[in-house]
Amino acid sequence: MEPIIELTDLTVEKIDGDTFKIHIEHNSDKNTHIIFAYLFERLNPDSEKDIDYSIEQEYSLNLKANSVKTFNQYIEENNYRLEYDIVLKILQELSKIILYLERKQKTIIQFSLDDLIVLDKDEFLFVNNENIFDFTSKKSKQVSISVPLEMNKFSSPELKQITEIPFTLDYRAGYFSLASFLCYCLFAETLIDKEESEIEKLLEPIYDTKLYRFISRCGEKNINNRICLFI
Image (cartoon, rainbow, N blue to C red; front, side):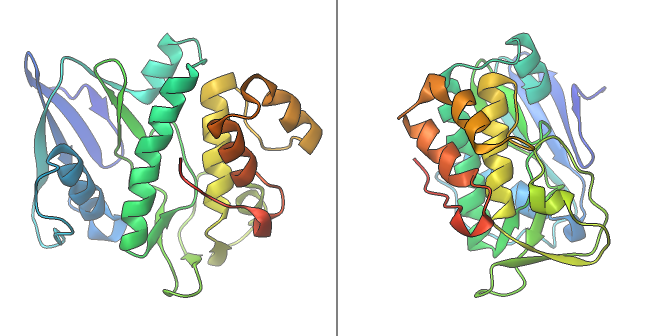
């Protein structure tokens, strides 16, 4: 059966009218077991939490929905401008995966349009393992990276300055990427290479809202001033 969604380590196939199968490649070096565990808990909220699936040989699960599509498809269908309440729902899903990963001593250092799939009209699921990395220790909150990374439009200034591997990165680089991703969902523009005055002008339509404050705190140019307070 041909997959309707195909990412590097994940595929989605349609089984019948309202049943879809998510299959994730078994690759513990790339955190696929973590993504599977997260999705299992998300789709089965009454299940046992924090199970270690690293010894499993196959990761697959079924979900019920009328439709499943990539986030790329979804945002294109909406002319790259999503409503405020929809972007709030996206942030709620991304906050769930970030908090889940923190319990595992992991974090996301950059976000991408491949991160989400969309069930029906507006239910979002995080499915991408590509940018998940371990903290170097419980106290430092630094991330050590020894593999080449593909930069994207949401990469933080700190990440774009990297010229060689391995390297160590402050986990708050991911905060900037998250703010930039949310901004793109709202206005089809990112925060990278923008001055503070340009960012303020861009955010004017949502001034003094929850999303405005969240994006402003996470999108600080000075990494030491970035704060991620979920709403």
